[in-house]
Length: 354
Ligand code: NAD
Image 1 (cartoon, rainbow, N blue to C red):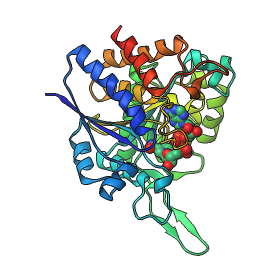
Image 2 (cartoon, helix red, strand yellow):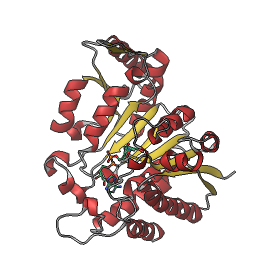
Image 3 (cartoon, helix red, strand yellow):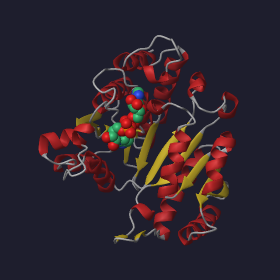
Image 4 (tube, rainbow, N blue to C red):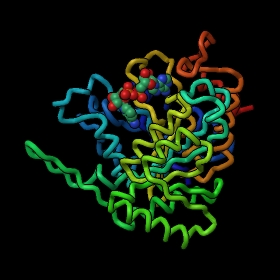
C-alpha cells in the first residue's frame, strides 16, 4: 500500500520551501520504486483565509490518516492581530495535539563547509553531532494556569508514563548512534525533575544497559553546550528546558534555514518541519533556503517510513551541494554569488539523480 504523506505548506516561505521538498520526495519515490501518495492540506493563515479555521477538519482527517506529515511554516503579519479569534500558530499546536507527537527530535550537525556561519570558533564546533530530544506534550506549558491581579502560577506536572516514553525514544536513538545519553533536569530544586531523574536511572538500567547515561542540571547543560558541544551524543529533557536548549543548540550551526526537526508519536508516525518560521521578511522573493525542509524529508524517510538508505542519500545530496559552494543568501559567505530557493532544490535533485 502506498505510504500517505500529508503536505501542509502553510504561510510565508512555507509554500516555497515545501515545493522543493516535495520534488525531493517524488524523486526518492520514483528512483526507489516506492509508492508515495502526496496529499496537500491547509493550515495556519492560509487555512484561516480559506475556511475561517487555522486547523480545518479536512486537515485533521489528513493528519490522522497519514503515515507522516511535512509542514512548511505558519504565521505572518496579516494574521497577527492579538484580538483575532483564530491565530495561525494555534493550528500548529492543534496539529501536534491531534497527532499525539510527544518526542521532538532536533539533530544539530554543523556542516564543515558552513563553519564560518556559527557564532562559535570553528575548532569548538568541529565534530559536533548532537540529537536533542524534547518532551513536547507535558510539563509546565500544559499544566493548570492561574492568574489574579497580583499573583499568577503555572503548574508543572509529569507522570511516570509520560517520562518513560520520551526517555525510551532517547535510548532507542542512542543505541543507533554513539551510545550516550545526557538526561537534563533541575533535580536539585524541582520535584518533577527528581521523578524524571529516578525514572531515567531505572529505565536505562532495565532497557538500555549498554547506553551510557549521565544526568546534568539544566544550567550546567546550557553552559556545556557552548563549552564542549562535541562531547554530546543524545540529549533528552522535559518540555520547557528542551524549548530553550534546542534553540541554543541550533545556533551552533548559525543558520536557521538549514535545520530540520521531527516530532514522533507512539506509532512512529511523525510531523516533520524545518525549525524556522514563515519568514515574512523574505516571503515571495524566491530566496528562502529550502535545505531545512529537504533535510526534514530525510528524517521523515528514516523515522516514519524506515527508509534509512534513502534518508542518507538525501542528506548526502545536501552536503554535496554545500561542498560545491552553492549557497542561498542566508548561508552565503560575504560577497559570494547566491542562488534562489528553486535553484537550490534543483541542485539537490541533480545530486540525488546522479
Ligand atoms: P522566522 O524563523 O520566520 O525568521 C527569522 C529570520 O530568519 C528572518 O530574518 C528570516 O528571513 C530568516 N529565515 C528563516 N527561515 C529562513 C530560510 N529558510 N531561509 C532564509 N532565511 C530564513 O522567525 P520570526 O520572524 O520570529 O517569525 C515569523 C513568523 O513565523 C511569525 O508569525 C511566527 O509566529 C512564525 N513562526 C512559525 C513557526 C512554525 O511554523 N513552526 C516557527 C517559528 C515562528
